[in-house]
Image (cartoon, rainbow, N blue to C red):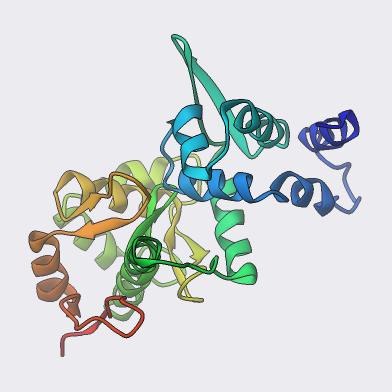
Length: 256
């Protein structure tokens, strides 16, 4: 990799001086490779993955993956931790996931060819993690239901605090977290916002712990379990048992 590329990417770690424009080209340069895009997409669920797994997902060799990962780390997009002889990579924080999710709304999805990639794309559009909170049609449908029921307005309402607590969500921890309790995150597949922030993370953790959703083993897609489907229908009138569309995706709509 040319030293000029590495040097310019490393410069992104320095915050811009007050009043000066940000240099978007630095981050754009860090993302300007298909393999790096694959890495970031795979890590959008907030998990840490070994370099070998990322290399296989992108279809590149170990040395090539190492070079690409170094660029992303230098740009402040990923962080690396060592465990024995393995190096694990994850997004540098929720703000990176939020920026990538918003960027996805501008770029659109990667064209898919073949049965397995199409199923994966459909799964991600239906339900997935955006770093630590629920996204896709599931995340958007829930966010809209919570606003309609008065649980959320500009922030968390008293009715919402009571309702989320009744579900087993750690509302107090979300309220006292160092990041905003409630934040909207632009959903790149739905073009509408879903719930993020500390409350979004607490809800995502609760859905996993309660077995209402399950992670897919090879990507950040989620499967809504039978218990989860019952909860969605009973509590918020969200019907996930829709016939599949021509694109193979599952619809989410009000059961009423």
